[in-house]
Length: 133
View 1 (cartoon, rainbow, N blue to C red):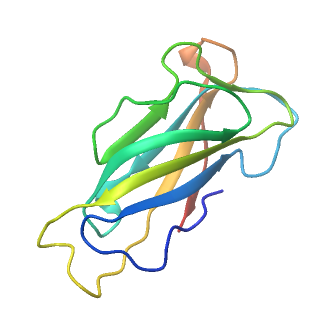
View 2 (tube, one colour):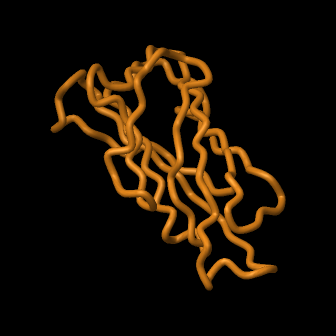
């Protein structure tokens, strides 16, 4: 589940939105979760600022993607979510100072995630669902 940021923003503003993985708790654990957020398809020029754990664990989050095509993960232990659990993460992006970001532009953003069915086994990677705001 992805929650909306503010209704309006101007160049230089930081927008924080919340991602909950999985949207609805499931009866099996999710291992090595990676949150994928391609900001380039949003309709606005945005750049990554930070990702912070709100609840669900104590991971060290890193963006291993680019400033506008995010791959948020814990490169050490991985984001492992126990059965019936959820990870709640706040992601902050900045509205870039570009011609594309003009007054009145609207944009949407979709984040998805992947997870492994077996801990530390990349061949068991499975796509999770996505949500748009």
